[in-house]
Image 1 (cartoon, helix red, strand yellow):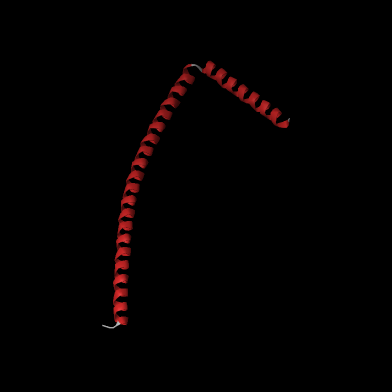
Image 2: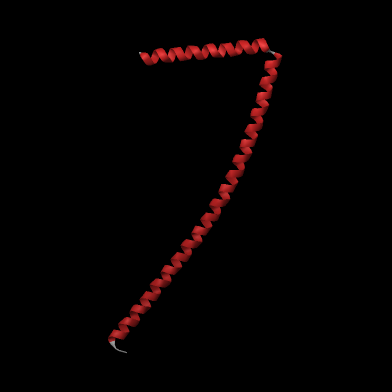
Length: 104
């Protein structure tokens, strides 16, 4: 074997070793990606389920609160009107105050 063939053989060995290392790194990266992807999907599903449960609970509580408020209004129409008028008056006062404040 002459020097050129020996150099070519040595070069081929290095190329194979580098290729093997690159393939190994790619396999590890792919495995890590797959693992992260699975964990992310599981976390997403868990979060989605919890969000759905929270939404359903909030919807139920809002419906219950609305029913309680409706019942109170039916049982106390005079108080309800006075409360609404008071809230309206406070809102108007705040709006006027903010408008004056912004002009100055």
